[in-house]
Picture 1 (cartoon, rainbow, N blue to C red):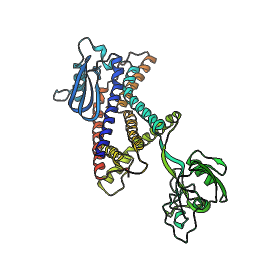
Picture 2: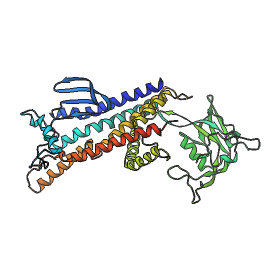
Picture 3: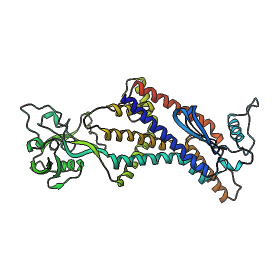
Picture 4: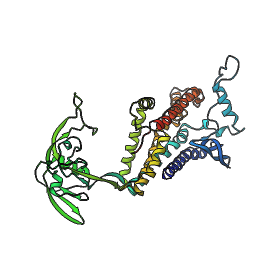
Length: 447
């Protein structure tokens, strides 16, 4: 039952995000006087609608998108167009005629194509901008209200011994370990345990230097000597000063990406560095409001990176779906996102309560809205970025005409791009089908 509830929560969040995206188009369009016959959330059969001031507002059966229908998206042809050999109008001519037929007599000035270039940009960028604002607001709620998941200065694990296998496999770059290795009577005590450190201790200072984050502790261990070091902790409300003597151990060499560096023989390269044998707790930590812009930027750049490598990722996903290759977890469809939402709502575990569930669920909506923002800026029709590109091209043509003292070339004729539009739609449908199939046969889970 909890799984279904999680999916429904995500569905509601997705519908609200779509509705706000379309409002981002609707409000400036109506403000600039464009006739807007329809504002719809979803596709397919209309479940509910109501007409207010000439605009039909409604909800359709399939909540997979939405649209705002504006009158006069295609301008009249400026020159005679060729028809098909049998005399029938072409696809472009049919679309143009349909767009012009719905313009009421005497209302030509209220068509979209009559807008100035800046106003066209405002209308078309309004939708993606709304998704960006949703992402920013949700990130602010998560960061300042619930907290961002991160390692804290409170110890979650203290390794009891220093078995040989810990040196390269279980330890990280800063001399900490998860405490999962099995100990034998012959194994020496790990430095942290020997010093008396316990799970639940909050580290306040290392080597006399105050620490505010787990990164500070990791850096202090890595930079410190393998010699007695004073460590100040708070335990049960009391401050204690313990002496820790890190041991030198073979540690994996990590690259700039945080992953182990392998030699030409494929083996992980190691080097001797200080080792203590402690691990942090992972918890939500509230952030100041000033941290939100950085979080938004990181989310944006991460999404752009995925988009730029999307073709290769889709090839990998296809190979995983129809073969035995490993599935790329960075790209999932709506089925996969729904699975994530269900797992967030139904998973049980110590330390995973309402705050953690809420933060994870809101993070899903952040990712979805940022993906909508970035994806819609692709300069191809029918995406918003395609209309933005058309408006910029129109502005460029008019600027060149003014400089050359030529007549106004008029609005850009986006109707001529309909073949490209249909090709893009076909690619998007194919991608959606592929992701849905992969999410079913080779699902990505949070576990």
